[in-house]
Image (tube, rainbow, N blue to C red; front, top):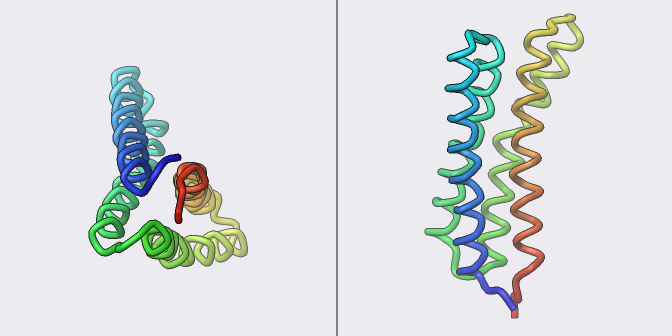
Length: 126
């Protein structure tokens, strides 16, 4: 059964690959002069980088897998809460661009959170 080191290693690999793939996508879109799409991908990259840093912070302060999970998932709640509020306000005032941006941020964070939980569920916590 996998342990906390397996979780750390595999999730970091996942984050690094996701970061590199997103950078490649941005570069390709820019070469095709698809600037708006590239800018949307930059938003995703920013979210990946934020949670990459938060994962490293969580790893440094965690004594065990449970503490790591609680600390890291806590960042998702704290960081994304304003995005949901901003999205609701943008919807209320029919600001479509802002709605799209907040949706992208929320979706990317949810994808990262889901993948973390998938890895976490594979480890032996005892």
